[in-house]
Image (tube, rainbow, N blue to C red; front, side):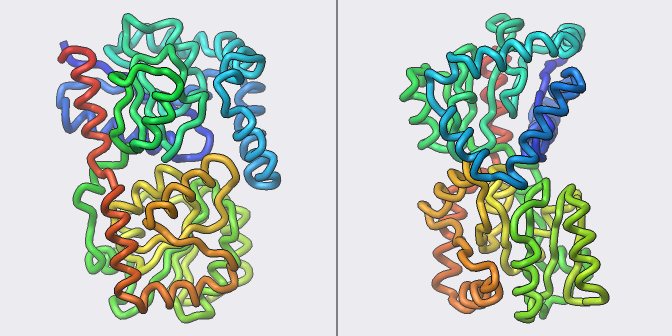
Length: 371
């Protein structure tokens, strides 16, 4: 009988889904006869719960990011996890995820992995310890809601994250610093020449990639304007934010040195084609970019998980930050004109990149279930 694994994410942003889809590919590579069920936990919630959950997050990070940061930091405490907020959250999950539990029961998984904590507590209560229910962290540092003691194992991004888990008293033999899982393509990513040919970019152009994350927030227009005026061929990824994409299109018409995209599914080529990347520090997207050998400049991290990701990368010298968006072109020129600075950045990125994280998670899961 083939191995069955359920990969569960929540459609809040795009990184959690990308991590689940990456793990799906790794399971098929490492365990060829495996059957994988990949589900969005929020799709099983009542429409009211789903709408409030996703809309409140998007509204806060887009229009009131410091409120989101306050909520994130003040709830990051073990007492909070066991207090009123966590109790209400788990009650909401249990009342609204009966369909998810039925789908899992019908599938009869040998293991269940979450890349977002929504629904995780309810599923762990229903299936663990008979079925290992594990959590995969998709940021460089952890929040206490990720460290639910009912999980069978945790896969974390770094040794620093491991120390957070151990400080909570969680068993060290069940916390594994594998890294954040990225698509297998990042083990041997495409080269610059191949990528530019595919994307119709000249080899002699200075190319900057500007990203606003999956939901397309942040100072995209300001950064892009500086780069275009500074002589860079600029590729802009707006994710699912059609409003920003249309706004840029209206302001900059018929500019051959500027190309604006919505959500794209060829990110390895986008990363590889660029000389420099200006991006928000989402855990999944920066994990991908670290594998590419392209200098990273962080722009406007959202307070909370993105700020912690930014701090982690800057502390290790794997990225630089942009303080004044109007000076993006100057920042890019200074970085690209200094071989010593580029070598420092890329050396630090190489030390913390984990392109094989997905493989290592799959192999450890197979050990846990005894196969």
